[in-house]
Amino acid sequence: MSVETTASRFDAVKWTVVFALLAVAIVGNSYYSDESLLYRVLGILAISGVAGLLALQTAKGAAFWALVKGSRTEIRKVVWPTRQETIQTTMIVVGFVLLVALLLWGLDSILGWLVSLAIV
Image 1 (cartoon, rainbow, N blue to C red):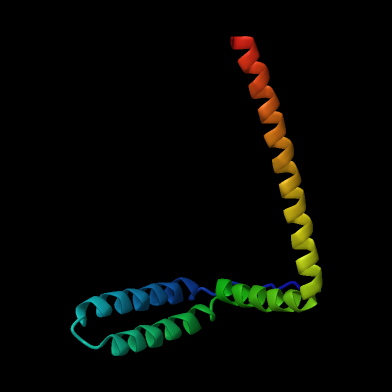
Image 2 (cartoon, one colour):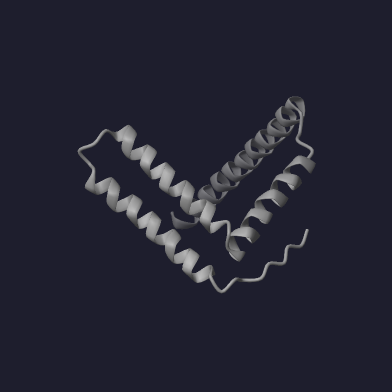
């Protein structure tokens, strides 16, 4: 899926307003620290929502939204394993890890024994 967007000459102004809104949310949260946390969170969410909607009106915002929609489409195409397949695969991995651990332990023991013979 290809999305071609052209940058508007107002994109820089829009991004400036987006960052200004986010700065207002951060400073406002600090300034109104005596207010209830609920009101501050609601204020931050409202300002962030407006900033997000404004950001989506830019070329980069539209491209990001197209990427998100494309990602959701691709996730729907994934064939997820069943519970039984997941358990079987996990048991195979655990078995191989234990096998390799035993091999490495045996190799370490043998090499340690050989080195102790060489040192003494």
